[in-house]
Image (cartoon, rainbow, N blue to C red; front, side, top):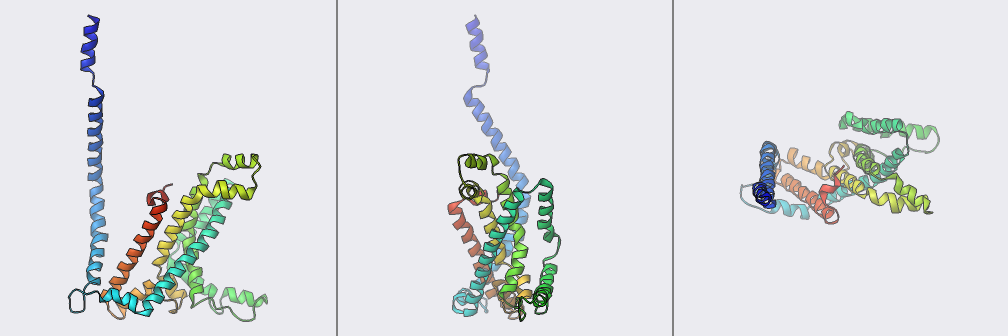
Length: 304
């Protein structure tokens, strides 16, 4: 009789197959609910981002008479001014990324050695530029770097130079301003990556006789590569679209692609060429993410 009772109890209890089916139904319901919650945001993104992008694509293939044309894209490779602007844009973005990576890593690593109160104050100073407009910061650099600005005046007064150093109306001024603006975007992911490094790893390496240099390059640095890659990708991509800083500090001589697009729209009213340049730049950014994704999934770059 106890066997019959056991069989009856076993028949009434849900089996593994039924539990799996229930779990699958629950997961499917959660996914549908998540999609319903995401749908309004996706619709807003589609309206505000995808539709203008589609409009730019259409304009880039539309000729002056309204027909289909590839002349706007052909001009990107035939006109030397586009090649110069494109090379200068890539050069400025690459140098800005390299300088920010070096300075940002030194600062982020130094913060790991500071007391907690000092780290908080340092992070506040790093974030301070975010509270100031890019235009205001650029004008401040103009005051500092101009021919008779504060920097040149101090160097002349101290006898370190005989003539003012040209630090404005050239690529040097644009580079200085871009590094100042982009540095926080490098420091934050690097600091987050360094915070995740277990200090016991460095202590274990030291206990086994490793030098501080060996410990840094073989124990600490490899663990911070995701943060470094994240900062480099973020700084490089954002540097490609700079407009205010090169326009003011470059003084019209540092013509990057964003300035060229503005000139095509405001001066020449050539929306087709401007759209082709914009679409080309979007393709470059996507190619960068695709190249990075071959070595590290892009979603891992922005994990905290």
